[in-house]
Length: 336
Image 1 (cartoon, helix red, strand yellow):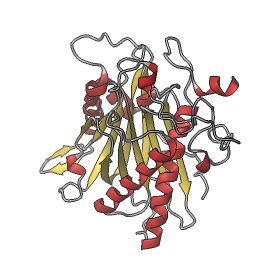
Image 2 (tube, one colour):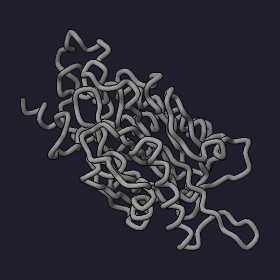
Image 3 (tube, rainbow, N blue to C red):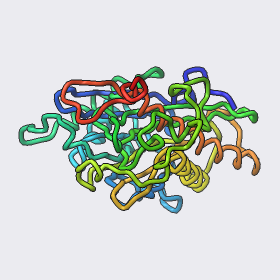
């Protein structure tokens, strides 16, 4: 397995990604646009999700494809971002056709970053709808990682979180990509070391190249969370997208989303807690023109977990230090 040419979600043909970051808020929005619309599903494994349009994505429901996925900071206020993305898509003439009307289908998820040191004293309406609109207009094949978009205000246990992405081209020719905004209750590293739990899956030093620790620290299995740092237990979530260019049904996309959650468990300890809103959206663009054979789908599922783990690690690795930060960035720990 090798990384795609960009090592980004957009190595899956048919997808573009746009970020908007508000430094004053220490928050932002990430829009993933699908052109043409992609078969989609979602799977929630955290106990505190904040979502929009996820019921529509169940395999037994009518609409098969989506026009975009929106990931946002801002907790429940951030759900407004999807309306901004929807407005931009409507201006583009995109959406599910109902007679003479087109309705852009934009499922969304949010993470909690309201207590991260940013100025959240907005006026009557939150800024997230406008941020979502701008994020959709900014969508392209190239995009930044770290303290940007939905990951701008993200925190983990002991380190800043961030927005990460990764991709893989499988021997069977299919491409898999992942994108994650990492705001987990738990930690992405072994204890207080700089060694990433996802190191087994790292490709070409993409998150520091340290590998696994030569000796596991004594506290490697200790449950260390934001609550140990005095932060509220309800201020967490990792929200993510897994995508492939394979032709999949909604039910198969759902299975791919479930497999990608294994990447959370490989990269974060603990994960899927009652106080995380962990969700994975799955997108199948079908750009390869091929359906996977049964063993191909096994390989896709394994790759989904590995690529997701890498995306999560890259989000924490890429976080940038900024004024007013409550926690250090990974590079500070690596230099210590």
